[in-house]
Image 1: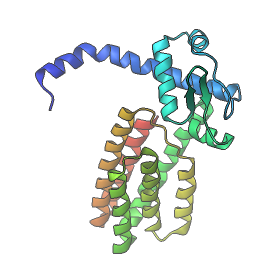
Image 2: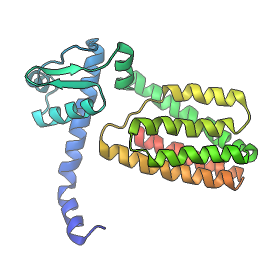
Image 3: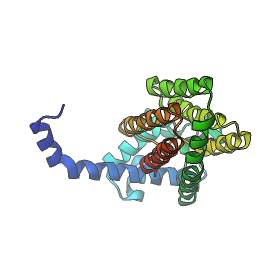
Image 4: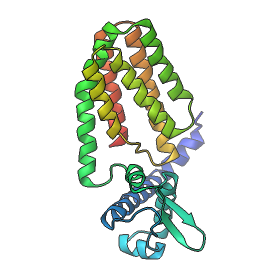
Amino acid sequence: MKTHKTKSSNSNNAAPNTHTVRAYESVVAKIRLLIEEEKLGPGDLLPPERQLADRFKVSRHSLREAIRVLQEQGVLSAKQGSGNYIQAASQADLIRALGFTSKGSTRRLFDLFQLREMLEPQICALAAEMATTEQLNTIRDFAEKVETTEDFQEGQKLDQSFHEAIAAATGNELLYNVLREINKSMLPTASTPTERQRRDRVSNEGHRRIIAALEAQDSEAAREAMRLHISEIRSEVI
């Protein structure tokens, strides 16, 4: 529970914290773009920190924070006394770890969310009419597993299974297959523990609204619950 003192402290520190977050996020994007442009692959050495700081015109603190984030994401690996190496078992794994980073791929991510916002509310509305008790139990089971897992990557997979289970409940195989193809392109993008926790909270709240509407067999409520859910996640990701 926040106290008056905590609010005062947050108010005093709001601007510096916001500046710090923006600084390191910008550096993360620049390093990712550097990896793509220089065609660096698994095992390649990243340029030294001093060189990167000069190149990006950023502080060493912001650079080190960005490198820490990329290490958490599995993009970089530090070797003491040697530097930061590109970490991946293969080029495909590296591409997967980098996710959507360039302007073109960011646009693709936006397009995917736009497609989901057009398609999934209608899928959810149809599922509210067609879902069997067994299918509802499967949907609810995936949502509960998403909430209880502490592994972010696993949570992303379970979240996809949740959405695919809803599509399966429509009984329309084409809709199910289309959604599965969309999900294959939806790579994890949260980079810090704080972002992951916030994303999890928003996602779980959305899942609960969707399940309530499905269980009530309320097509309009299901449509609106899914529309809101996709919109909220899009705001978190992009």
